[in-house]
Amino acid sequence: MKKYFEFDRSHTTYRKEIVGGLTTFLSMAYILFLNPAILGQTGMDQGAVFTATALAAAYGTLFMGLVAKYPIALAPGMGLNAFFTFSVVLGMGIPWQTALAGVLLSGIIFIAITIFKIRETIINAIPPELKYATACGIGLFIAFIGLKSAGIVVQNKATFVSLGHLTKPETLLAIFGFIVTILLVVRGVRGGIFYGMVITAITGMIAGLITTPSAIISAVPSLAPTFGQAFQHFGDVFTPHLIVVVLTFFFVDFFDTAGTIMAVASQAGIMKDNRLPRAGRALLADSSAIVVGATLGTSSTTAYIESASGVAAGGRTGFTSVVTGVLLLLALFFSPLLVVVTPAVTAPALITVGVLMVGVLGKIQWDRLEIAVPAFLTIVAMPLTYSIATGIALGFIMYPITMLVKGRGKEVHPIMYALFLIFIGYFAFLV
Image (cartoon, rainbow, N blue to C red; front, side, top):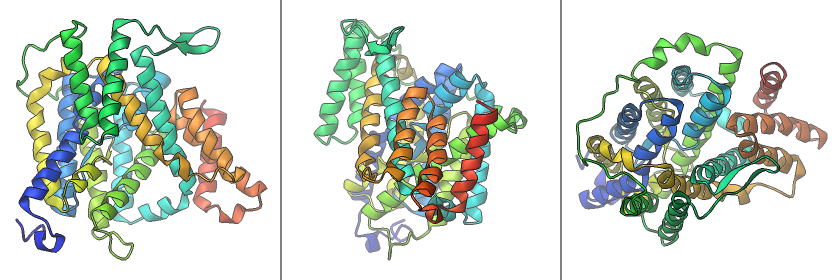
């Protein structure tokens, strides 16, 4: 095992790798309970989604560890699950079964462009500012969902939104949870988001605001309600409306995975001469996990930036991911805890994740209006239109325009002009 993962070359030990894997697991364990809570709002069975989440995450993480040999974990992504639920299913009125088929198609496209090594070309075609803007916009969108579900922000006929009733017990619990979570994260506690959810849930049970689970460990929930639904509705995806949805799944996961893998690989010292060894294997882990997840019944998987916490704790090789993957499989037996994951428990996590996602805001060149305007539209449109797809579309339309007006049209990649036409057609004929 030590020889296979090249422990000596990476200057690591079993202890360091196990601690790294455990740290990564604790840092990302919140998604096991948060993802079913979010996707459950579409009508999907939460128990089935819990099982699908754990299995898809375990598959992707073990593939990443055993084949690519990277200390990077994968799981259904925040932002992607929000887009799936609030934009596609609840916003567009598309059945969740068809939305899963859209995720499946995006995964198949991912596998194809990974095998034919097209991914790098597309990554280079999208300006970094729009990648940063997409991440920031999704962060604001997720935070807005958290504030809304907590009752901190409520609907108002005169002003659209306003401050909610902060004295409501459930809202007070969410505020308490957010403060606790932020304190843990600011203090650098690994797994702070997960621990914040645990503390909030326990406090809610003590206060009588959350139902106490009848058990902690039980049999693994059945996948029957969601398994294979993506294949049964695959033919429904090939409509102009759904193709835009598939493209959005594709782009969001595309940027998220590429950026995360590069960042964590650099931190772990895997990068050699600014090149990523075994990059094809790492990208295949991600793309194949999307197909597996969609088949089982969950939204797109992606590489988790929380993997950086495991690297910081000493993880350097794929054995770290193997440890995380095994822990994800063991977590399958803790489904009874889903009953305590109420909006008051998930809201602090959503808001905190939003805070972390807007961290790249400063990397956008705000002093260059040809870049600032499309980036701003991308960011602000996502929470204000309640649609990640709309934010991406507006930004990708405005970018070629502002660059042409500025006289920098030759710097815009042909792929960006193609996307410009696609999204113009989206607004002209579908919205």
